[in-house]
Length: 88
Image (cartoon, rainbow, N blue to C red; front, side, top):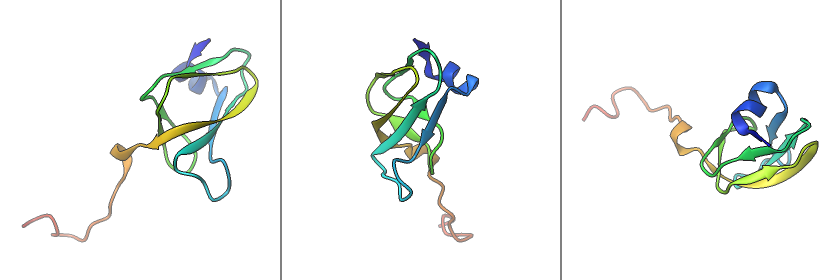
C-alpha cells in the first residue's frame, strides 16, 4: 500500500461527492493506481465540494471506487461576517 499523501500527489486518488447533491457524512474515493491506498483516521481528504476528514483508518483497494464515512473539516469553514461585528 501507499500513504494517502503520496497517492494524491501522484494523481491516483480522487475524492468526490457520492451524488450531485452531495452527502456530508460520505464521499466517493476512486483509486486509479495499482496499489492500495492507506487512509488514516483524521487525515484530510481534499476534493469534493468541501474537504472532509476520514473518521476511520482504511485501505482503498487498487483500481476501485468506494464510499467512505467522513466528517466535515471544521477548521476550513469560513464565515463572511459584516465588518466590525467582532469588535465589541
